[in-house]
Image (cartoon, rainbow, N blue to C red; front, side):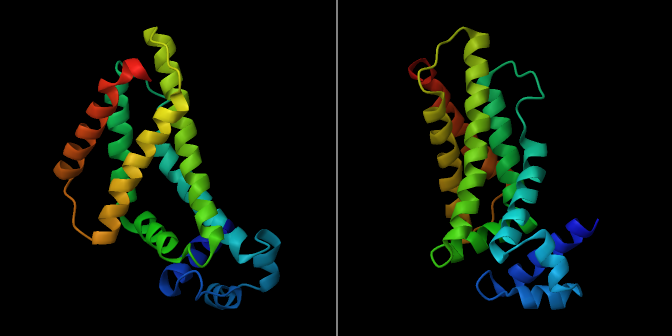
Length: 192
């Protein structure tokens, strides 16, 4: 239980004053724990932030997995994945962490590294899924990873635009955009 409390408390401090503006001393004070307690689990501010991102990845992965379900069609699965991922990413804590990463990664490269690791996990998941579908549908795929990268980066581009503009997004708007992206991607499946 202490791990979850440490991570949540540290996250609250990062969101309040930014990554650069938050010190370990400030986190320790806000949480009412000793530096020894914090450093025994997280040897640096970077390790602490990475643990926060890892926890968010695990939460997101639980809602976006493609492996636990039997999908009749690759397009349906990709739509579902994209909608789940974007819906969760546009809300609350995850949205705020992403804003923090995008706003401070130019000064703190470790934030960009943490985000890149999260992106890589998504790419790997989509790559495996595309390979499974290719085998199942007896439709060879030359570059499953390239298709997965294109898909993930299309999602990210739209998401970053939403974050930067601060525009509200309805579920219908998000779903219509996802539909167009998946249709464009899947219509070229023979060339994957």
